[in-house]
Amino acid sequence: MARILPVASFDGVVFGATGDLTMRKLLPALFHRFRDRQFPTSSRIIAAARTELDTDAYRVRAEAALRQHVDAASLEAGLLQDFLGLVQYQTVDALGPQGWPELVATLQERPEQVRAFYLATSPELYGPICHRLADHGGLNALSRVVLEKPIGHDLASAQAINNAVGEVLPEKQIFRIDHYLGKETVQNLMALRFANPIFERLWHADTIDHVQITVAETVGVEGRGGYYDRSGALRDMVQNHMLQLLCLLAMESPISLDTDAVRDEKLKVLRALQRVEAHEVNSCTVRGQYAAGAAEGRPVQGYLADLGAPDSLTETFVALKMQVNSWRWAGVPFYLRTGKRLPRKMSEIVVQFRTPPFSIFPRDQHELQPNRLLIRLQPAEGMRLEMMTKEPGPGGLHLKPTGLDISFEKAFGQRYPDAYERLLMDVVRGNTTLFMRRDEVEAAWGWVQPILRGWSERRDAPRPYLAGSWGPSAAIAMIERDGRTWYESTD
Ligand SMILES: NC(=O)C1=CN([C@@H]2O[C@H](COP(=O)(O)OP(=O)(O)OC[C@H]3O[C@@H](n4cnc5c(N)ncnc54)[C@H](OP(=O)(O)O)[C@@H]3O)[C@@H](O)[C@H]2O)C=CC1
Ligand SMILES: O=C1O[C@H](COP(=O)(O)O)[C@@H](O)[C@H](O)[C@H]1O
Image (cartoon, rainbow, N blue to C red; front, top):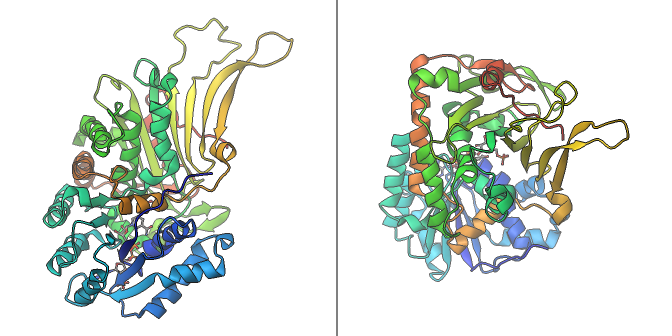
């Protein structure tokens, strides 16, 4: 049974409280933490958005969202009403005067409470919201501000946001969220690498041939086309989530688990990433856009039809070949791919080890498969170490690839909390370890920037791929040119 560490009483102010993220993720996450009694009932959830609503009307919306996004077994009637009793609504205009005095007056009723401001709005509003909070006296030493990703659209806009927020709050009160860092299996990468010396001894270029990171989704852009079309897969998934995964895989051991010790090591990886020059954009990156096809057994339309915009050049798939310039990783490519409308929802890391330098098994009878460590982030969370074993039987020596498997569900047999649950409680605790520091975000944008520039200079349309396929064939060609292949696990 997981240990629940209670947090202090807090006022959680959610800007963007009528939006998709709040309804689908934040309210359900808070509800689960309430259900486990992790926070005191003196806490308040102050929902803020532009729409004119009163608290009763907002509670009706919140209840509908919880009924949709929380499993029915967890929604005991009394508990749901108790939770909704903590919620109040305040109309606020981030860009105008409306609602600020009332919001701050509400906060001042409980000066001793932690104030957690969650900015679930578009990033252009982060600076204005923080400044209005400061101007109205809403910020104090117990305040923390959570910034959703993406922080900006490119390096310059990220710097502008960081400057604006940094003018009114010190770095230790700024929580740049990347929800992948809150996933249990992502946190387990630290345990895998630094609590198990057998792996750490093998974790370098002498032994590892290459690494693959795949984050595949079956969904299309759903209702988020307006945001997504200005973003695309590189900004939406790679600049943040996937680079963070790469950092955790590639970083050196931090000297401790202290917030800055971990973030310093991740930053070094981001700074060691080999820049993709304009002339390499074609060989090291592939952009795709889904066309009509199938998803989860039903026909689906293509991205352009989903969007209702026939000439969008936004990528819904990206594959990359990357290099970390360090002693540990010299010559070891990292292949990343992510996309919408792929055949399965799955996030997986494959660490492929080198094949034996010499085989005593006759080649015509035995094809030695390389050892691979598969780290399944979602679903079917777990790990598998693939190795060659002798097939039992008296008829000679036959080798077969088999796997040592760990299923986290079988090992721990408990519900996996959503990433936002853990991260929201860390905000209340004031623990920034699983959040991105300013220099990390800017280093990540700095690496992505030349690729964006290269793409925009070339003005190539993304390559179409059928919904339900693994992306454009160019992504397969990119890795196969190196004599390697994307690994597709069957479970
Ligand atoms: N949805 C998701 O799954 C994810 C979202 N994100 C990020 O989270 C943020 C929010 O996303 P999402 O919920 O999808 O966005 P939505 O468009 O669904 O919601 C936007 C919210 O912002 C509010 N808002 C807009 N303008 C103002 C304003 N001037 N003053 C006050 N409130 C305003 C809206 O209020 P109103 O409706 O009342 O106008 C609404 O509540 C974005 O930065 C997004 O990139 C990140 C990861 C995943
Ligand atoms: O941040 C985002 O992540 C989701 C995928 O998250 P997951 O936890 O379901 O793997 C993605 O769909 C969305 O486009 C992106 O903004």
